[in-house]
Each structure stands twice: as C-alpha cells, then as structure tokens.
Image 1 (cartoon, rainbow, N blue to C red):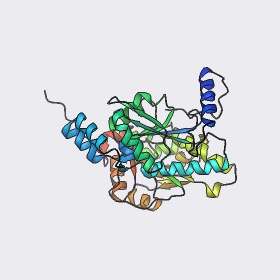
Image 2 (image 1 turned 45 degrees about the vertical axis):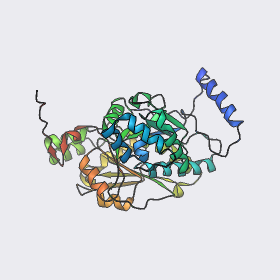
Image 3 (image 1 turned 120 degrees about the vertical axis):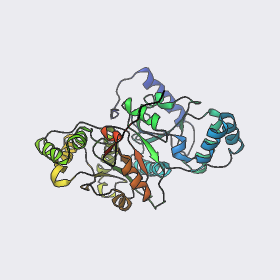
Image 4 (image 1 turned 90 degrees about the vertical axis):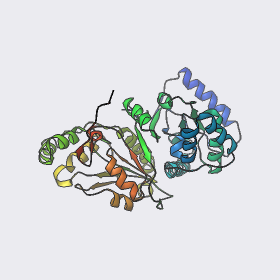
Length: 359
C-alpha cells in the first residue's frame, strides 16, 4: 500500500534544491491565490475530470461520434463551465480544511493538494481550466495524458488517494499500492456540511485486509465470530485505504495540537456491517495498534448502511461491495467503490457466476 509521506525531509538532494529555487521564484510573485504545497509534505488527492465535473453528455459524444468530434465540441464550448460532478463537494471540503490549516499554520505545507489527473487531450484543457476558475477551485497541478492511462503518473505525484469514474484505472492504481476508488453520483442530492470534511469508511477490504471477510464468505458467520474472538488481540492486516485514513489523522492532529479537537474540520467514520459484541473489538484494537483514531464507529450487524449514511452525510463513503454502494447512493450519499478483496466475487452474499468466453 502507498506509504504516508514523511513529516520531515532532511536530505538536501538536487530535487530539494529545485523545490527551494521554485519556492523562491513563486514567493517573489505577488498573488493572493494560495500556492500549492510541496508534494512530499502534502496529502495529495488526484481526481479525474469526470469525477470533478459532470461530463455525461461530453462522454456520450466521445462514445458515439469519436475523439475528433469530442475535442471539437469541447473547444466550441470552452467558455461554458462544466457542471459539478460527484467529487466536487469532496474537493470543496478539502479546500475548507486548507483554509483553516493556513490560519493556524501560515507557513506549513502539510495541506491537501488537489491534482487533476485525466486522460483528456491538452486541447480540452482550456475548458477544464475555465471551469476550475469559474468555481474558484484551488487546483494548480494538472496531468493530461492525451488518451493514455494516467495511473502511471500517480506515484510521481506522490498520490495519497486517486478518484476516477473508470474502474479499470482504479484497479490498476490499487494493484500499484495506491489508495483508489471508483466514484458514483448519488441518485438524489442532499445538503452537506460546508464547514467540516466528513469521510466514511467500511472496515473489511477497505481499511483492513479481506482476511476476515474470506472466512465469512467461505465458512459462515459462526466460524467468523469464533475466528475474530480467538484473534481479538491480533491486528488485522492493512487494507487499501488505511494509508488515506493515516494521512487524514496526520492533519487532524495539527488541529488537536492547537486545542481545536472539538472544532476540527475533519471527521472520520467507520461504518461496518460487523456486529460490535461478536466481532467489533478486533477492529478497534487494530486501529489502536496502528496509532490511528476514528471519530465515530458504527457497527450495523448486517443492517443496511444507506439510512445511517443519510444521517452522517459524508462527502465520500468508501466500500468494497457494490450493493452497499447502490444502497448508499439511492439515499443521496456520494459513494466510492474500492475494488479489492473477495467481495468482488460476490453480490448480496451470492457468488457471482462467471461464464467463459465463447470462441
């Protein structure tokens, strides 16, 4: 999995000197717009253009009429801002946290850094830039790969989280050890907090590995309960989103250090189908062993997650099972699918039968 970035970088390498020179140059330029932080200190969130903006119509032009017509349409409409997409509220919430961090730590570079990571062609870039400026989004780093998958650049940008509409690219990122998820637009719109970033995580196969979920799927609940009790003091292995929770915790502690715990603009939730009494202790002890905190832990014992999430109103909810994603987005939650673990072979508890390809 992707490693959390070091709090300090002391090696005066050539790269460090380049950063220092660039910083001096930009510091001498007069601008009220905040400068992007240095990547080695930042929590970097890479979003695709189709998650940040609603490009449903543009995508249909591309699929029906081809690349040239798509680019032509984008150029003809480059002065028309794109509509917000599924990741838009999440990005706005990240910016809110940055504002508050800069108020407390004016010179710190431990901030969220948002990167637009897209396989769009550079000719489409003007419309994307105009749309970002229209909504006053602080996104200065772009990577437009002209049809090539952008996932190869994620490590170069020191990405902590990658959000895309393309499940194949998300799968590629996870296989490279980068936290990633496929975003889905909710079926209805609900009002989200504009003062606090709220992030909800499933447990197994998201924050933790799928080792316990394998036992449930293959041997049933009773064997699972026995296994979790016997291994209560043995931490679970980390899952694909553990490092992102760790990065959020690093920024939360900056607020705690200023006695702002009760007013922290980041709040995290564990929303799991596990039962608390039967299998919850191992989860909480695992987080403790990692030195991580979760603000709220909800054990649903198999109950639907959608209604509970509707009360939390997170800016993003991560889960590895599509039926939880579907239930969440039906009630207005912005959900992101993590394609990891044995859960990908099941739907609503039933093994998905895969038919062989016909020759």
